[in-house]
Image 1 (cartoon, one colour):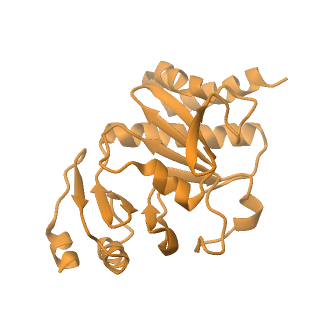
Image 2: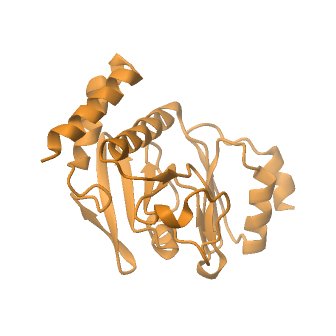
Length: 215
């Protein structure tokens, strides 16, 4: 019944739909019904399911910060894997979500080349990216914590906040575990400075910014 209704639903950009009392089996069926080729993002927490559709502004900053992460890694010669908005879920934790992007750095060698994942066996991503242009109904931090993702970057209103997992909750930090030598919170100002100059100019600026912070 739920999946039949979802096929008829249209969640406009910037809007969200919150469903209550969704069982894990229904959650799995909804994921199958929505499919992989879609713009919506989902989050699931103990029977609550949120479905949202991002705005173009959301997608611009998601892409800009994601590309910056990749450029930083290349300058620092760090191997990484990026898995975009993969659905990460664990039934035992009654938790599931799709970050705006996610990366492996510390555990990259353990997942190199993998195309399917099971969090009962595989490590979670080392870094997740959340763009909060639109407010979300669900607090995603408890979901991330139960999935064991050690670092979350959250961009909101021109600021980039770093959160590190300590025990079962996240603590805000000025320093990234992935890139400890860099002043990551300064990235949004750099992106804004070069936003009108094109993608290539921004990428060159990010790489130069990284080199300028190295010993």
